[in-house]
Image 1 (cartoon, rainbow, N blue to C red):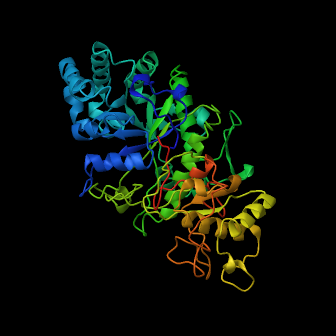
Image 2: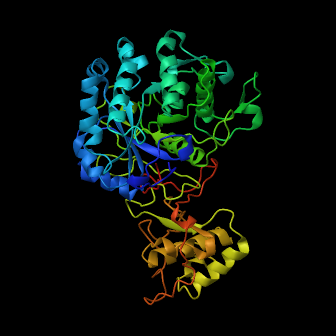
Image 3: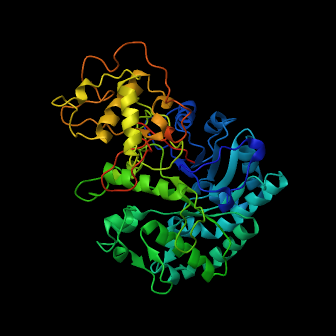
Length: 501
């Protein structure tokens, strides 16, 4: 997310705001055809995903993750909370079996104890802190506490009156648990895990929250929400909920516990009659903007520039989850590893960088200098030996008659003719790779299923790649956009890019 450090096991750092911004992904297993552990890890590697959260501590998947450098958050399922919260010995055995037996080959960075226990299992809430303390004691005894942190994921619904954020506070009935929990997190330099779902906030607002505000779409200043107490402006639900959490912690005299968003996302499919906004377009918009927002270390209005590591929910669609269609449709991929949709993100680095379908294109970079584009176009159609006859007046790709459009066609033809190596989509920095097909009308670009002219290149002896200096930004996927500024590259679903996590 992404967001991201690829650490050697001997240089493991704790999860904290100090680690910087990164994007991670949740991996659920409620699939009728769950991929094998080796297939899961192969997908993670192909997408350059470096941070994952598991909903349990599956031994086979942990074994497959060994020696990959991927940072892993393992979880204590809710059904195990009673046993661990009741017995120090049980907690010690759990750590020995699920942490010590795999570390450091598996880069385990944290234990997430339960899932939204305070709201989903309130009767078990008294066991939560004992379970956390028992697990911490077991880590200390194993000399693992400096590498593995312990926390518990909360639903953002534990925050009451979340807007304006400055007036937010945790549900007071939870104070007997939250106050000592926050002190524990503070004393162990552990993060507060928070699940933040603007989709649900939007759905439950009965029209009060605009869709654009939930999706991170740019708003004019007069449309932003303003906290009248602090005069801070909020352009999206995500930031408002995070600041509400910061203010709620301040209310309990805690100011130095970092927040890690352990779950956030948007469903790409839903019942049209009741979940009309669960669409691929909205999922693309939300996740693309979220990832850009996180990786840019934008922070929040209250804490600008403070990274908020975030894990996308989720890697795979889980068709066996109970509930509505949207509940089964949060995945970036289906069970076969095919992308559910294409993400678009600017400045994501090598996040989800390797495309799984080969449907990539090379186009002129948005905002590139026209003179440099013209020089690159001349090179492609000359020394580069691209067949540019279709750009002539009256031919299939002559319109629009501008250097941006013509350069995109020529760049893409050269890129495909050279085998789609990322270094062949550079052109002195004025080209970028995208997973959005730039074909239009009768003008078909190479890679779209058809091509114009008799050949992409004028002969089989390709010109030396004088423009193919090791590209840095060109390995990021850039997508031409119309409205949302989340435009560039982050292919996750017909190709993909994710330095996640």
